[in-house]
Length: 124
Image (cartoon, rainbow, N blue to C red; front, side):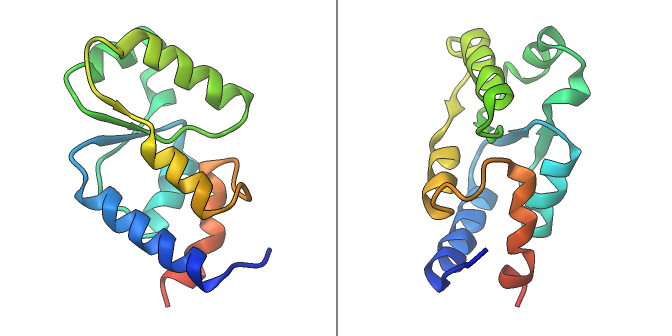
């Protein structure tokens, strides 16, 4: 995979922006968390699958500002819709980070865990 300087620079800015945001990052699983942390993300990250169900998840996060970073596959899109459906009137849900990430990687990354490919470039 070819990675441009602009992509690396934009991804660095993305991680900085994520780190200073006021929301809690929500990902699907532990590999997504590991990928974000390998890029320097220090923001609080919660894994959806650790809650073992939508009801427990909704009850746990309903008082927080959320940054959804689910995968861009069918399952990730389904989960995002369900979370938004359950929480849209109870808390703030930010999808702009997900959209920005897709712009930066130009669609090359469909799963958050794939961001680990950028680790060597960002940590130079």
